[in-house]
Image (cartoon, rainbow, N blue to C red; front, side, top):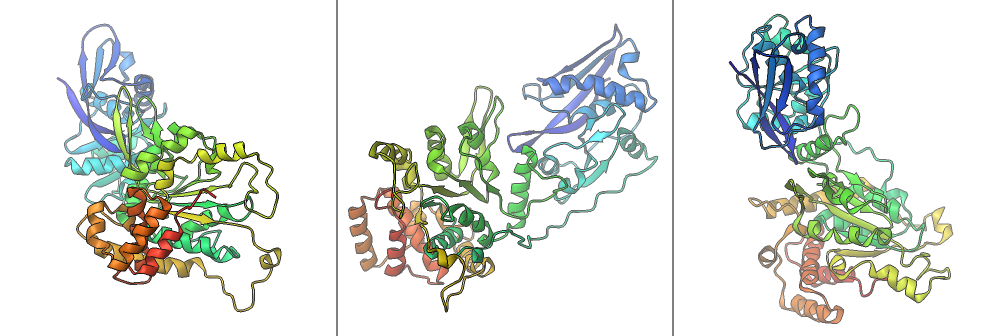
Length: 509
């Protein structure tokens, strides 16, 4: 008689329930695992046999019998060592060396040869799926319980070994249910504050607007003027993650194996800063069975691309669809998956290869090199950037002392304004999936961004003079809406529109 247990695996960013079935029959010894199992699962035969032997029980390889393990559904690719635990438990049940109830229970864990359990990736997503599918208990290796217990409504049990779980299931020594992990908002401990940056008031203002409406921004200027420092300080003015956002971000990072050691829940917005030599696959994700890339790891946070013009052309162009659709669709021969990409894109670049164009220093680049450098930023990418910010050098004496009567705002002060503007947008879009102004469609713009006749006339004249595309035209309106929200104004006034227009590039530099 076949014995069936339940396990789960991650496909894309979602969990799938996997049935682990076992059948024992007479014959010469064989141990087969069927159901599109990868190499890590095929090798589990040795880990399971050694782990069962460490219990003092009789392992599969010490008896002439045919052992068949089926992982269902059979047409779904199975990956990773998380099926070790359910395979071992199913064998102990089928061989009558253990007796316990399996109903409404999910088992996950990699086994060491001595029966110890090793942590797995994606326990948050798997616990979430188990709850949705009606399971009441989930058994995990020690170290995964805190993450899984973020999901309410399912009992989480973590154990250090196969023996501990077996004793619990047979009511010998019970494992205490892991207590729910409480969500506590970030307390904002950053190394770089906006008040640390001297000068660059125009860029600071632009980044505040970007943070308030979740807009994309590009900073352009000579080397060493503070572009990277501004980008790093940008995270300090973003509002904290809500509970739902934190769970969403944590799930992505857990599945990707990007959680830091002893990190259970990500409370601060992600800040991803890939090097300019990164491939396009590392950005969007990929592989035979697609995995998330840097864009998805930056979901609900910031993707900062420094030295933007130094990235390969196709890496730059691959940003088009994610910036527009807020998702990444990765199609491969074996699978097509969609990953979330709700990001704020912050870019930094020099005006030319040597970096001195437009500064007090002499540019040594030939015209052809400058043109080739700037042409890497294509029109479709220019259209998708809401704010173009100049970051140029300041006088050396201002690096030591502030001019009399000046005061540099701290990140906390700016963040309060950003949070207020975000809360205004949340109320405006209540009942829809939209959270910030940057996500508005053309229909939403007509509903929420009504312009008076004077503002319409100014916008149309500017659009003609700047040769704005329809996409850029609508992005200017959305930006003006955010500026009005920062000033707590219901109507978009002409001064809001004029400020939004000044962030459009008249030319690249």
